[in-house]
Amino acid sequence: MSKVLLVTGASRGIGAATARLAAQRGYDVAVNYISSRDKAEAVADDIRKAGRKAVTIQADCAKPDEIKRLFAEVDKSFGRIDAFFNNAGIVAPVMPFVDIPAERVVKLVMTNTIGAFVAAQEAAKRMSTKRGGKGGVIVNMSSIVAVLGGAGGTTDYGLSKGGIDTMTRGIAKELAPEGIRVNAVRPGMIDTEIHADMGLPDRVAQLAPTIPMQRGGTPEEVAEAVLWLMSDQASYVTGICMDIAGGRGI
Ligand code: NAD
Image 1 (cartoon, helix red, strand yellow):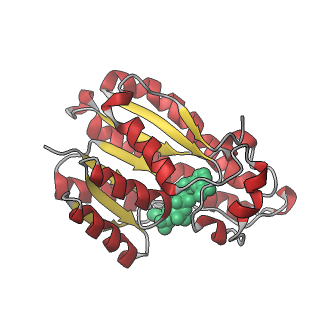
Image 2: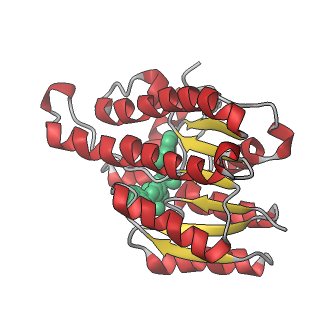
């Protein structure tokens, strides 16, 4: 029986790349999206072309009730979940620390941290061997910004991702005896549309000379790391935050 993976924020970027690669590695995939139904359906079509099952599920991963419905729909479609990529996230325009309004911090933390926390809870409830599950793997989406501090106008985004590192280490210890491995990926500058959402579409090219490897990364390079962390090859790996950043942040 093939394994079932849920990816949040899977209609584009790193989430879409991971969903597509997962199908090639034999996973059936639940593709979550918030508003881009057509793009999510295109990802699902590619998964089916790779010979695997796919469903698309709309849900806002900043809202606990919708997250709970998302997991209930995965239950209905597949009857199990083996792997969870806690990927959905947002950024905000670069702004000096002292000018960032509290409402903006709340929105970032609600989506990137609290939403991810609730989603990890829902995954753990289903995977836990103490609750009748078969074990499983969770990969959380952090950022190298959690290490760098988000300096340069993204301190609130940095704060939201720092919480992911803390949560990852904490729940990895708590859930290890229940058959669940929990790790995070900490990408650096990855070439996706998220930078345009910050008002900086050329950010990766502009910052490339400051990265030790002198280039940005691709969504596929992050997807490879996520799929490795989920694989049996990583069977003794839990509680780590893996930098995928071309040397940025070391
Ligand atoms: P992206 O904007 O293409 O992907 C983010 C995805 O999350 C989108 O599909 C978006 O619709 C979805 N999303 C946002 N809010 C959501 C919500 N409330 N509910 C459901 N889905 C929601 O950008 P990406 O670069 O692929 O980002 C994916 C993750 O990687 C994010 O968490 C981001 O913070 C993180 N990250 C990105 C980089 C980078 O340089 N691109 C670096 C480090 C970390």
